[in-house]
Amino acid sequence: MQFTILIIDDEKNIREGLGAALELDGYTVKLAENGRAGLALIEKGDVDLVITDLRMPEASGEEVLAKVSAESPGIPVIVLTGHGSIDSAVDAMRNGAYDFLTKPLSLDRLALIVKRALQGRELVLQHRQLQEELRERKSFESIVGRNAEMQKIFQIVRRAADSKASLLITGESGVGKELVADALHNLSPRRDKPLIKVHCAALSESLLESELFGHEKGAFTGAAARKRGRFELANGGTLFLDEIGEINQNVQIKILRVLQDKRFERVGGEETLEADVRIVAATNRDLKKEIEAGRFREDLYYRLNVVQIHLPPLRERRDDIPLLVTAFLNETAAENGKKIDGIDARARSALYKYPWPGNIRELRNCIESAVVMCEGHIITADDLPPGIAESGGAEAVAVPANIPLEEAEKIIIMQSLAFNKGNKSKTAEALGIGRKTLHRKLAEYGVTLTGNVRVL
Ligand SMILES: Nc1ncnc2c1ncn2[C@@H]1O[C@H](COP(=O)(O)OP(=O)(O)OP(=O)(O)O)[C@@H](O)[C@H]1O
Ligand SMILES: [Mg+2]
Image (cartoon, rainbow, N blue to C red; front, side, top):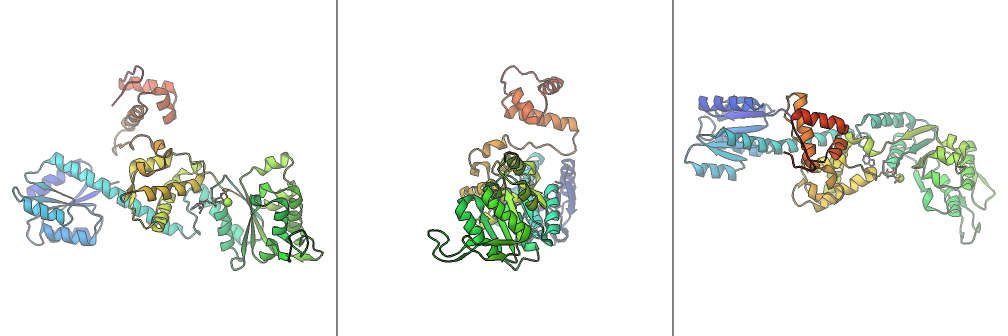
């Protein structure tokens, strides 16, 4: 991220000297010779950090600090004080300054303070940016996803929504199949009619049949009154058949019949009923295999599968993780009455690397538990459930911008080697390169390792 630092000081030498030093460190620098000019630049926007002298003509450093604290609390202010005026520095800290430096200035100390202040600023900005993106994305129901594959899926759902075609949603557990079914219904012309859901795996064969089609009074022991089935209840709307791969052949035939001629009878009933129902089915099984194994009817499969949507597992769309994390942070922090400002680099890296076998459901649970565990306002790796925190590995590697690629590669390789305690096989595997390649590169760097030696 390219940061802009504003330096306000009436002494030309200090202003320009600091400016030149910070420019050399890669920052964009703006200069102002008094508080008023400085405030005008801050108001224009894109200032990330302010370094200001205290005593100046036309709006003092105290006034700058007061204005920034009140109007742009996210911008850190570092105060410069004359030698021996420690009282004013203390006052400034009390009024919200990030830190202070006494003159004559130590450039090393300044560089350190600036770096630390901007790291905090970066967290705040990243969080803010994701929040904004999230607000835009909300337009597609509550489904979060900017991954290209997910965008294609949203497109299909939008197009399919208008028609009556049956939809089959496949994908592992926790990928959001039910959410897609909700979205399809809410985008369709049937949105004002019922969306009825049946969890097929939860019901025994006979119960499922009477749930779906209803029963007449006395149809079986315990059928004390006539009961309308889900097909009847969903008339004019949508019927979501979850875990369709679990239903037996007998019920499969009956569903096929409704799909073909829209007709059915209640269990124990003579009367033939009609239902105008759109079917959305979901499964985490491979129905093609179920057909081969003789457990699922091929004709039903083709009836259900007019439009198919396959939701990829989360590990195949990791680019959505940051946005999902922010969405779940917002939700669960609000639910738990907490204020969370972001996630630190190590925790973020762990969340990004973990394989998420339970997909989005697991991610949501993980964030909720982290929010509950978190004692401050920033989630750290220690707040994550065990097993997930470890996957983050080492501290995120800081690679300076604008350095030759080869140098960046070296930093990453050495860091990974250090993290894996000098174990070359693990390092090669983690980096996705062959052991031979790793050896060659280490030889190029002049690094020799015998056994598990600590490097760095
Ligand atoms: N893209 C997404 N954006 C936001 N939340 C999501 C997304 N996908 C899934 N979720 C959330 O993850 C959880 C699991 O989603 P859902 O119940 O739709 O999964 P599923 O595929 O039906 O899982 P299962 O096969 O186990 O029934 C829910 O809390 C849902 O709100
Ligand atoms: Mg489900």
